[in-house]
Length: 551
Ligand SMILES: [Cu+2]
Image 1 (cartoon, rainbow, N blue to C red):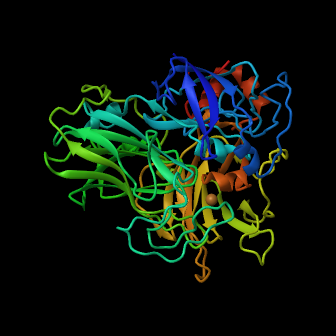
Image 2 (image 1 turned 120 degrees about the vertical axis):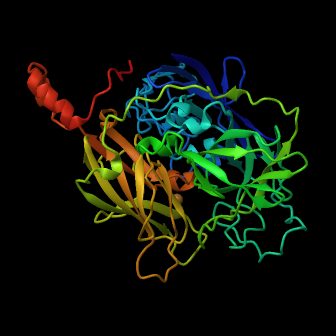
Image 3 (image 1 turned 180 degrees about the horizontal axis):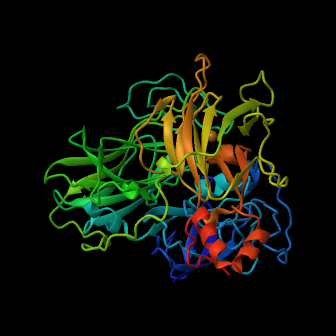
């Protein structure tokens, strides 16, 4: 069991921004939560947010309102700039109150600590997950302010022996408003076209990889601010192999990670994506996918093996520019951390066990080999509220083809999609807008089948994926094709899918899905008295977990 008390706090900064943070009972900021499959998590969240002027000023949908401390946090659903809640990104746990509900759960300042209580499924893949607030309309301001933390499901060395015994580092990359917004770019950079700004005041994409970025980045809370990007420092023993577990906890910034030695990109041994080992599908127990760069949308995670430089070799951990499209924000080339080899480098705080039992065999056929019951088409689109004014407010939509585009309405409760537990579906996600978006769905993972109309060889899972922007000329919209896994009994219920650029999500780029039980509840009850039929129900619904209950 993991029991943790977290308080979320915010504090206005001299530059007018507001920082948000989780603090545990011992004063640790945004602690890494480490659990094993099968563990019970009891997390008491206290809301100490104050009405930060900035949060209220940027609130796009709701207005601040007085909320009674007596309101039920499970059903109150009043979401204001000082409300909060938690989403456990990537975990396959129920979307019910006190577990992973974000549709109704809303905790107000002055409420007694709110208890999250859930069991990590026995078959949750080992890897990097994360927690962050998900209050509709206010997610961006809280996450951009710093409210996020890592969840590590232990045991990756059981699934992938290539990482057994390696030291590990958890690196959390967040974004924040620029610390030096008025500075000219560094003189060492190429000259860029005149910077343009979007309606949020963020630097618009200039397509060069240089100039002012929309946001600054930080790595484990060490800021790496524009314009000179003074990097954080990582010390490592010469030539040592380590597992780096990197979370992009940015609100709106895409990453494209590289490790450079003497300016040359080094091989990065990818072993897990979005919390799931690449070899969950039955590939060899020591599988490593060597790459020279790793794209990481906001919300996504990559876990990879890195080899330290030799003594005297200068190492740099960087993110390369991402082309977010003509409507996107400026996402620049920048350093994150120097990597310096040193014989007396301190040991990383955590080392993976050297010897490990293999994990239990998968209880379900591999997702890639299951036939989908339906193919759906969804699309991202945007609409300027004053079409002749490019700086007017924009509505953001994520629409099921055939339905009318509309911003997500938290009060509606009417699902856009109804799926059935026990099945597998293919979804084609199109982008009809001129900026890059990142598709994410709660409670489950998917396989990327096609990217821009071409099949990709990705026999592994993700929970967040980029969907490229439309250039206004191509005959078809850019699209990805995904295979979504609705087989887990834990995911019955209502939950959301959305763009993980949080300003898009807050402004409506989200939809509601209802996953219905494989069998009507009544017939399940009838079958309980008949063991023979119960067995057939087990067969149809996948293998139920021994106990995944919450309260
Ligand atoms: Cu988006």
